[in-house]
Image 1 (tube, rainbow, N blue to C red):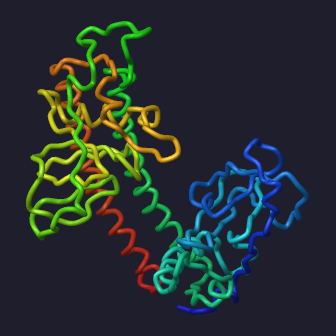
Image 2 (image 1 turned 180 degrees about the vertical axis):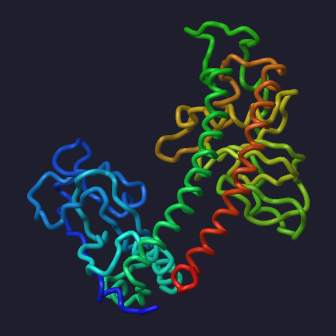
Image 3 (image 1 turned 60 degrees about the vertical axis):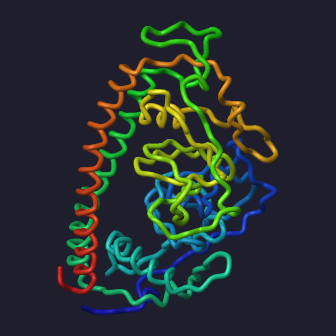
Length: 360
């Protein structure tokens, strides 16, 4: 297979440093593609000022984020402007297929990203793009390879969509069965199978333990904070299952833990369930508008004393159990779909490796 430099077959256009004083979020002017917009494919920022048509991006253009993670994505957000630190694949030689190049670049960009040292943010240069070694088979072969990888990637996309749909099914089922989690007695009709009560009558929230005042000893119990699992400790732990809320930092972030755990002091955790189903309690807080009950706007945090007195409509254990059965059925399908997605990811990576080494 012929190997060329990417500069031999492609040119790249770096975005323009548009003046931030002309930015707005009110829809005035042209949408502006910034780094954060490359993957998500849309922009909430607009530029209201004069611009050179050279920096106009259209649907179908391939864009590359040049800072942080070096992502490549196909733009489908409509006519927009190319901002600085975003690069567009511009002109291609007649012997190069655009989709083939787009299938090749992500792995090459990831290799550069992994090899790039950084102090704060990693930066990619156009020179680095131009210097990439690019395998260039005949045009017909490029189209064949791109078609195979497109088909394999479409299978992965369908599997991800099925997982998203199942997750949305669980969420919509919860809302259909239980309504708004903060639905209170005032101005609300009482639902059959629900009772009016204080949140603290059903669950007890407890602040986590301050790990800075404890001795960290390797053990079998994960220490859980609002940011996730940090290290292990072998005492002062709670018995699973448990539901945890981020008290500071990632305020309101919700975890459900089925094993024993040791909650960090940034966490509020459900100490007692009073015979309520942990899965129901997890989705209750997952849908709960936590920001309405933060103790301070300047330094957001959760206070259990603000949550315990809330009057809510609370479902019976039977209704909670009915929801859990639906959730468990959907989760089994999600687990199966994730296994299949992992297998498809492995297959796709293998096809990529073969495609650009001349073995496909």
